[in-house]
Image (cartoon, rainbow, N blue to C red; front, side):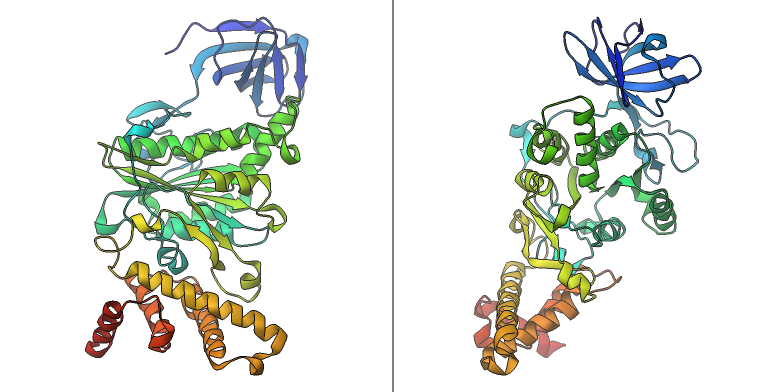
Length: 461
């Protein structure tokens, strides 16, 4: 609800994009402000800190020429909101929710605060059923379940952003249920922005996709607002319109860098590696907006992308992300170097909620046994590869050489799928073709019933 505007003339200090005011009353955290100064014009700002001695306004846009003494700040009383509705599907927005596709501002169906509202834990549904991404290493072995938070971890130079874009293009809900994708790009270049706009506009999925594109040259505050813009749009689609929504956020590392930049400008006491001590809580305020609610047909599933600095999974950003989310998809630099695309290393990857969305009624009855056997056979092959590096392949036992050959074929034929999209049935068939090359005594994770069913399928085909 809008309150009467208040105008404060003269700021006590300006530090970078932050403007400090004293004697502010009845202010609200997140409230929008209008900043004016002679020769500079008008800038938009947001209240990011409220305390007894001072109130801090984050100014959006350039601050060159702003003088504390001549600055006037008008507090509007309005919190950060955005227009939401089905009309956003097919649109591209910037980090503040304004059109980035040259089209008029959407009218929408409602106006919602971008900070959202926390889900009542007692009303959360346990994530169930799967989302088909078209990536075999994910769909088959680290299945993404509706309502889950499953991040992608990849070091600098690895194609995590490309994998995220492929998931946006290839994601599907089973049984043709209402489905939408919200893609939030944080801190990307102008060239990448144009590339995403052209790529998705030319694809058949744009009509069910909302793009939120924040560029690296925009103010840091926009990198903090962009994922909230996307999640607010997703919440309306999911819980008001009953759609299953996949939210892909890339890159969380850029978000955390902006968080650290803001904390430094506010002269806060730093935590691990200079990041603010509240970064865990801040990230949780994003990730915990995923889920399904009892009594609502829709759901929100999140795939955050994290560029792990120096390939270090113990760095605060992937470390804290891993604590909040339910598994991880890990990209391998060694596999990328060998030209395997996408370079998903399935052994350290994990989907903790996978078993709630696979099996009878979801994918196939044998999915759990099938995936366990592929994991076991591949792990044995990786061990054989390590031994061959020391002993040479000729020094391996026959079963180790067989396992090594399986690992090579598994990476070339199952994980490496290039630009192709695979359905869940094609993923199963690719895995079974590999298991068919192994003797029955090596497949201890498959029950006799599953093995015999596979043999009947092979004979009939």
